[in-house]
Image (cartoon, rainbow, N blue to C red):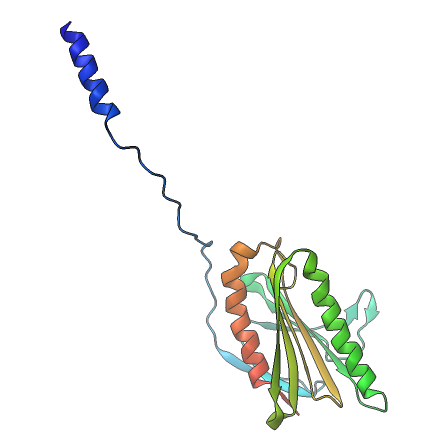
Length: 199
């Protein structure tokens, strides 16, 4: 009898305790060691422009595209070894009688590339960029979601030069884990745009 009373005592004691309400864990991102930002000048004799970029981006001139020579020596990549990414730049000379049509083709190509990501995109933001003082006009494309190229831009003087750049990472696209890394690199891509000038 005494054992039964002790048993019921323990039963009542433990049955009256409050159930713990599960609390969702806060969103966390993988730990990333971001490189230091030391800006250096980009200035190549075969390019008609210059800008500033962080020295963690390493220059590589592109000479081949799908086993064919590139259309212009000013096609290059700024690789980002520390973040496993790259920014691809292509330059087009749009001067001549049909400069308007050439510029339209470059803008259309950049827009088409952006559209290709719509299947996986959860959102897209397009913003114009304008600096009349530097004769610089541009458009930036930010694409949200699990996409291969989350950010690209086109810059032009509208009569002779056009430059198109696209950001890529060499990993499986995962917007949640890549969000802070993309945000970090976008700050430096915006620095490239604001420091960009024709020479």
